Image (cartoon, rainbow, N blue to C red; front, side, top):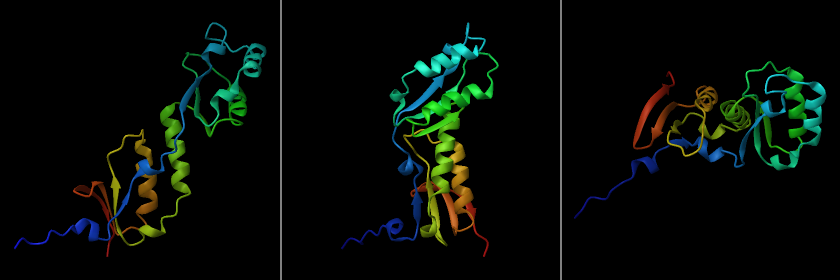
Length: 169
């Protein structure tokens, strides 16, 4: 008679945290202001303000937007703020920077609002494989929240994990 196969992983107290599960859906957009500069070098306030005023901001509805300037120009802070003030009415999130800054900001906010009480005194696996653009900083944010409460933290999949942290007894 064959011995019964027991799935020890599903019977354990292991908790898995998958950052991909909290990834908010929505288009990610880089809004480059270089096209609104005179010869892609100089910001003329009157022209810039006219471009901001006449732009169709509704196209960014429910998007996550990173405002940047790909031209090698010195841009005053107020210009980014002016664009952000228009985008804020439509976009889910607006940052000044690139897509990595955007994803980092999104995850920092998401993780800061999560309730981690279900992870207290338990071994935790932070899932490693992802099809979404999860920034490395998100893993650091997660460690910061889990390490004070978890029994141990591992990284990877249940079948092959790397130890990251183990609480002292």
